[in-house]
Image (cartoon, rainbow, N blue to C red):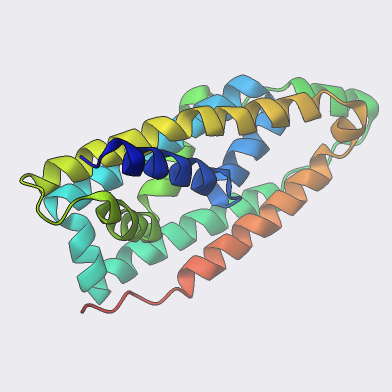
Length: 216
């Protein structure tokens, strides 16, 4: 493990990275706007669970395989891109409410299940090879070259990064849920769905166009 100074730097860098808008934040915010803080927090927990998969996979060498194998990277990349495009299409094709009563019902509506929200966040991360590459690139910077157990240090830092993301993700959910209670936001929920749909499609296309990292 790094010393206290490097550990605090690792935590601060993790918080800043989690505050950066991306598909994860968009997924949390869109669920919280539509279905409230609980759905947003559950979405964040699903995303965190997906990150745990990448941390443990990287520790046992799967992440290194993705970084070295163009084929493995491409398979996961296309699966992830298709998933993001599917989410975007669902949001773009969602029915627009036709009356004030519809808007109120939409703002109060719950998703099919919180389990579905959790699994959506989980697969959003698991199917994104860029998350695996991120952990391989970011975490080792804080592991001493002479560390006796580098794999365990990687896992511990990865777990710490994921646990630190929970309050940040929950903050996004609470902020979005607070915004959704405002009447002006409620009237614009269907347009927010459209905007979120466009952004998910853009994230999917960007992932589809991402080149596999070149092995050294």
